[in-house]
Length: 390
Ligand SMILES: *Cc1c(COP(=O)(O)O)cnc(C)c1O
Image 1 (cartoon, rainbow, N blue to C red):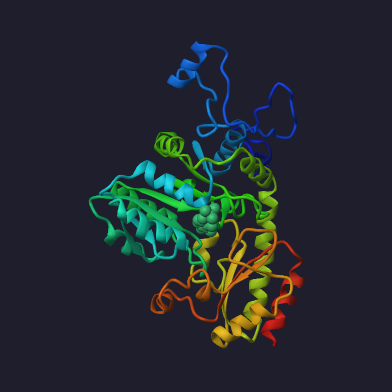
Image 2 (image 1 turned 90 degrees about the vertical axis):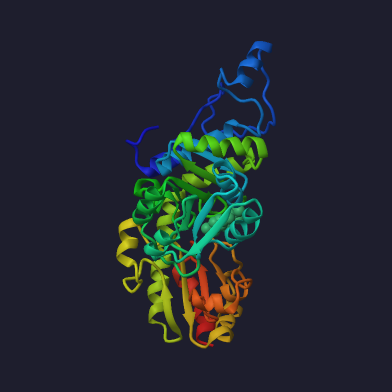
């Protein structure tokens, strides 16, 4: 399907290849391998002369539908589906970089990505410099002759800082490096990084793309030539998305537009309510006029998205009181689910960061992060009010 269609149409229909049975809903192909008509066809498939499926570590028809649909949504030439968001980031780096190469990454990226870059890749001779997400001059200053990759998430977790993708894309181009954007928080329904100048989009499909907290998955997207390197790593090393998970996420994509709109609407209403609450010091949400990068966010994103954070007056004790007074909200670090989740970053997702580093990055002891779900906004507010008013 072409660019002529709107995103909500592509989400429902892009990538469909019906089998001989003309099934309406996409079929799930639970098979590890595929058979050939004869020896010559087997040889032609293996040599690449004839396109087609060989073995599910390489391709599977259900996974292919998912890849084509997500590529259409991101406006990408090619999509490589992976078994999780982390294996998407790993496949991207292992497929495109070598020992001696250098990465510049935002300091406020997913904690496990920091571990991957800072500890594991380092052992294989790939060094990473971490810089402030929003300070473009710091990115510029960190460029080295061997810099190959710039890596960001925007908005960031948990403080929802927003960076200018276009400005970072200029830094990357001048450096002869690629810009990769982890688009997990926004999804293509709210932000399309490739349109803004990024070279690579990364997804943890585990979050909003599935949207119902059922399976793990991931994806790397970009120009076909670039993605060939990523795919080469995937088919050899094997962090492939399963057909079952691809099918589940495919069904998630069909409702992505209406879910992202509803998540955003609920999050904005909650952010406005929290901003007025006497027990709340500060609310972090790109959709609020008080957000420091509100104008940039509204230029770059269709809406503020589903995730917000706020500082409760009274530090850790007060924040824990809010968590412990909830009856409905799920106390978990996951996000992008229909169910609202609440987490205290300082003692969970960011507990391995030193207290000084946490303070420097603005993650205080009173900070709570809420990934706003699709429940009635009044019920979400009532659940938070109990602890805030205690
Ligand atoms: C969850 C997450 C990941 C990792 O994804 P998994 O599917 O858990 O491996 C990467 N980036 C961001 C922004 C995430 O939220």
